[in-house]
Amino acid sequence: MNAQQEHEVAEGLREGRIEAWHALYDAYCRRVWSAVARQMGPHATDVADVVQETFLAAARSARSYDPSRGSLWLWLGGIARNHVALHFRNQRRHDRLRRADDPLAAASLQISRWLQSREAPPGAALATAEVATAVRAALTELPADYETLLTAKYFDGATVEQIATVEQSTSEAVRSKLARARRAFRRVFAKTSACADDGHGRHP
Image 1 (cartoon, rainbow, N blue to C red):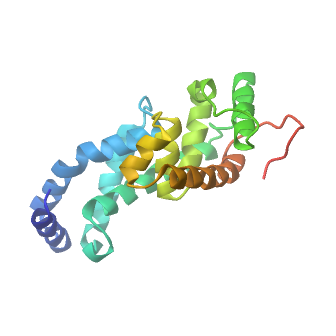
Image 2 (cartoon, rainbow, N blue to C red; image 1 turned 180 degrees about the horizontal axis):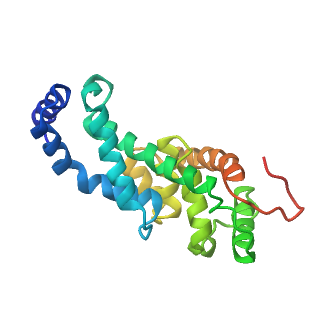
């Protein structure tokens, strides 16, 4: 969608025209689905529900869209991110993220040690479904740039150099930002998961 098309769709949304809504959906449905799946995990069974809720919320607020505050994608992507976070919060309310089984506790401990810089980044731990869900839930509570950076590095396997190229930055700047993002993640993860403590460190 070019700038002129986006302007026309934005005008149509504010005027409540159904064709503008159809154009928005056709242009961004696949992109929203990919973004939600990336945040929730590619095998999450609730991706379709979150995508649907995203577009329903967008439809409800379409008339208030203000292009001066960002592009259509930034607006729609923000709505999607909010609904992913809401999904994980609802899961926590039902105690789905606080299972006390041993594999979850052991994998959570590995991530805890990594967050305290005592071990290498978690590899196998993220393959544990329950822990991967807890990690993704914590990521949604971070600023969007931290979430994107950590997801690229630890879920997508991108190198620091690759991330620097995409962000048009330097490797040193990316490493510095990664360190800040990990500290922020550490604070959130301690609150959103049943992370075990081995007695050699303390949670923030």
